[in-house]
Length: 213
Ligand code: ADE
Image 1 (cartoon, protein in one colour):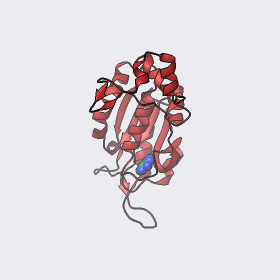
Image 2 (image 1 turned 180 degrees about the vertical axis):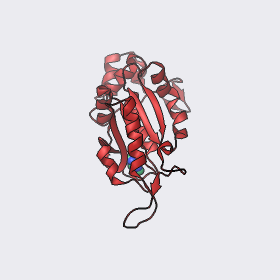
Image 3 (image 1 turned 90 degrees about the vertical axis):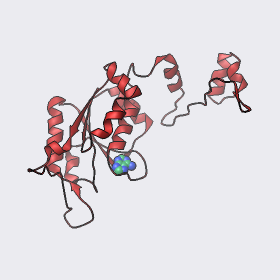
Image 4 (image 1 turned 45 degrees about the horizontal axis):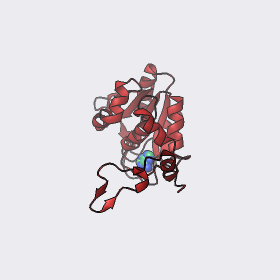
């Protein structure tokens, strides 16, 4: 899967994409990332990317021309990519969506809006608008990271070993019902690990983990 990220702040992604699982996912060629600096597609010598809204209102909007130019640039490299736009007006992003995107394993272009928003005409170049929760963030970078992390960890070969797959199998529909887990020591400041987990009875442990006990 190739993921192209259109942003005014590529530096925000450097650490996140090159740490832990997302780094590992690149190492095993499950994913590759390309950061596209929207400023490169700005207009004129000042590389302008924003302007005031028609009809008045606070703040600035991202202009349509630089955004479309950036998408067209990304599509030259990956013509069949799906274009994603994070927005509080989008469909709420759930685990089931992360799973289906990982299964489809299609290339993605993610636009990261800034300022007060974007010229609505950009949505004609967008396949999916998503929202990561009922709150408003200052930009699309963090929602883009949420989308990337939740999808890439599910790509084949990224999560380590059978145990992770087993834990995933306890997830029902959209809601994670991941069970509580413990490691050594058996007792810490009087707080004990549940006895069942020390019993070695795997069938009973599975039952406990599913909440059937
Ligand atoms: N942009 C600003 N807030 C957002 C949210 N909650 N989800 C997606 N994109 C956003």
